[in-house]
Image 1 (cartoon, rainbow, N blue to C red):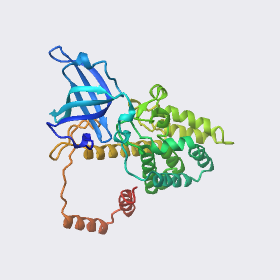
Image 2 (cartoon, one colour):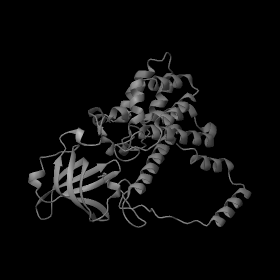
Image 3 (cartoon, one colour):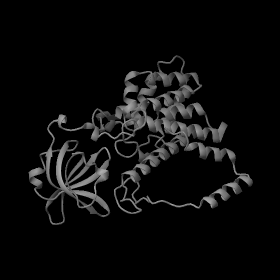
Image 4 (cartoon, one colour):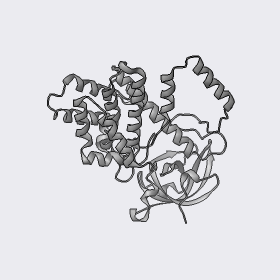
Length: 352
């Protein structure tokens, strides 16, 4: 019997299936009775689970980041599907599960994607930044992890190869923005920083099985971990300009934009500002897209998506082709900015 994945489950279904426990919380209900709240996952998404009965019996039989076999019934609660669990048992051996059922994969050709990534790196003309790029990506251990790691544990590009896909996407966006603004930006600093901005996640996360945070990741975070590696490797390049190192360190240290988002500094260099917004755009776009794809609610609206704190519209919007054609023709005649028009067109073309 084939596996029943989270994205395919409907309301009022009885299921018996294996899930991964991402979160486990013991709570007390309004009546004073204890309950267990779980965040369950497989490669297709996440689902809340609740244990209302036999809490004392089950509480110590499994933990966070365990694989468990669950019996239960699906139900809708506040617009979201959840699993009411009647029985749960820890899987005592990984040999009993198919790990591919729990490792999301974008389906993109990783080697082709990495080739495009390296070509973008080779386009960096500054000799020092080019050498520094190679010190990272001629390192076999870094390349091995970089090709398969997710860009995040759950928010965006949270699948095999997601880190590579996101980094290349942000670098491509940076190149488009550079072409639009021209001399106002330093392309080498912007592209270099875009390619490396999330590299620290290969030290922040452990992806040997399921994405989990390392001790270093929890204590320092990927931004600080990358900064350490950056300064260490730059010191190996003879006469690496101190001012250039300071610039790229600042751009990378500030790419989360605000202190409340874990950014040690806020952008004070224009390339840092651009990187912050493009990184945020690509992450949010990917998160939005996958929220629509993974939602299993009926109708035009998703359940509330925690990443956006709202429901998202997934219905189709019909646009009159005749009106669209006339509108585009009018804009062209009135002197529509052809550079910006090409920018928007190319942005969604030839994406791997």
